[in-house]
Image (cartoon, rainbow, N blue to C red; front, side, top):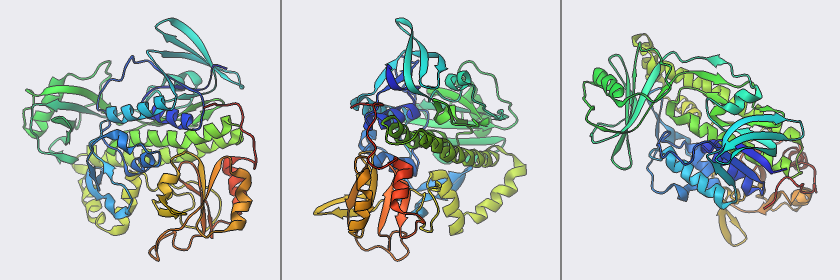
Length: 498
């Protein structure tokens, strides 16, 4: 076996997954056809949930300086995400190139083998391993791995080669995008409806403006190269009356509203994550954020299986959990597409939603949806309000040391958080100590309506989701530990090494 896992694609999904696997000590090889990072800004926002994830892994400092905001939008209608009371705001000015650099730096420091200039050609899944054929500077070679993960984007070669079904709808319209210098445009962060279409302006670092323009009635083109900047400038002038033809284009691209999702995220020893599994209108940057979150869900599960502590069936929960998240995302981006790209016939819907959004329940519902904070996984029956949800940031004291629920997750291990100094609970969990940190802690006073106000203990999965809580779960902690971490005292397998 040459490596435990081969990842195809060194974008946000692939690099996040590589870092998660190496954090758990799993051998991983990342294959990327590009000889170096493009430096293109691409996605420019990190959602609240992604910021939480990066904090849970100690990654925020790698992003450098960035601006945050509590303001978001749903289909161009302003939305106050601050009503959710999360510990983090979304980051508005982090280009994807910065995110990728941060994730690659982490992955390589942890020991990931990233092979640029290597193009995936084909695969053979024997049922026991996957053999990947790849072409590099030295010619073609084969790499044998336990698992293969396709993180190679919306046109995924891995997806096509492995025969995944990818149903959905083709694009019906097209939007043009450009990062430009040498102009001073008024920001339109949530976008704006103008006669004949939609425009957006966001300021990026380095004196760059990100503009997006969508002109109604223009069918999508079959492009083999990015559009010329003159095409973008022509659309912009028709819709806004502003001439930007003298600007310096830094990056130009086009995207449509095609909506597709694979029917399964795993076929045998081949898995998909990120845009390889789902494509949609990139409303609010949800695509890149969901891609990172796919890998955050998959990484610890794949590592647990490879290390021998958990059964291969744990990987089935990757599909059941993330396929539903992807399906809901496609639904909300389709709704936003109608609001953004629709003409006068959609204006009554915009008006009604504008009237509803000020209601707190409506704001919280839509804000949770676009920020990634509404995700709840099925972790078993129970009444505790946090079951299946992500653990909110909670300051803690462990002995004489101050810490937090966020900091306790930095190692990528499970955490059994004992908030009531329950010796019986700790004894029941002792058989999982090799895979789960058992922590006795206290916290300060909490509001009466806090879901943690009367909680004695919570079991956190490595991705920060609450897998068990007391009181509130309808089964014991041993059952939850066995479900998510395998049998007690399971020995580490040979799937990975530090």
